[in-house]
Image (cartoon, rainbow, N blue to C red; front, top):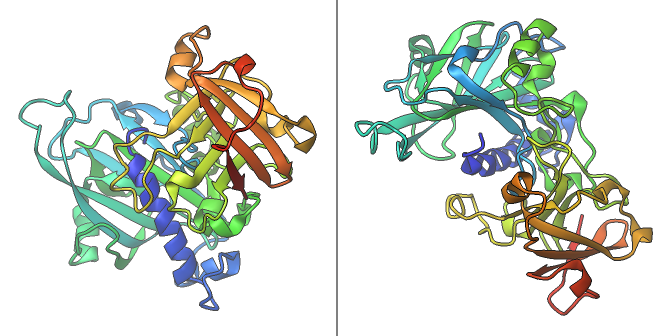
Length: 384
């Protein structure tokens, strides 16, 4: 969800962990065949995903958020924001979209801190579950911020150990339309999905977990009649309506970059992204994550990266190559620029592709494009 930056860190880490745990040769290589191990544990999984049910009651939802929200690299989950999240205990049902299995449950606690919540809810603690599921021999996904489990799931799960990153391995068969949990008072329900048969192009795939490299929209597996119901409360109008995570284009500026020397995806402060906004899909969106702190996301959840839109929205990153030479982007806070195209830019970015997968980058705060002529000793080198 838009307010759940912390969940992005969590699932990026989980993707890397799963890629290592389920690798056939134990080397940690992120290969489709290695990641199939978890799916191979369930012999009756179909070849293809078939969803016949929506994940929750849409009349209880305010909006559907696309995948690909950018803080660091685009998030692999989207989800729903609740129309009225301030229900306690949780009452809004969460359904299995198709037949499959829950194979892992994790449980944390959260506290109601939203100043818009009723006074009697402020400070109240609530459970926060994530459910990892498989739906076919190649695809699976998860629900995040499920705040109560159904009695049927609780009975089959047994004792659930609590704590961030604590896995509770289960083998619970689920059927399409089955109530498996509930949401509220958390403001949203996260939904992430991957399909190993639909791996995206990334210039440096070894940097990502296989789940991330194969991130897809759950709506892709719904029949058209149910898709239309989701689109009715989807704010994004650009195609694909459910968003995207992969923007890398070989030999161009487009996509994800990492400060030279980066070795782990959790080095958040070393990421630089040139993509599109998850809601305003036609807008160049640049994320310089250097203000963030590296690690598991807990210490950086209240720190914002630079998220900019480009004045004039041109040139497009996928059109910028080594032959383009120095490129200048006048940039402003994305929310300010979307409200006022004439807002004064916060500064100028100077960028040049030095090699096909190597760029030089510098941010000149408070300067216009006319005031920027060349890089200084403060420039940084990013690669991929």
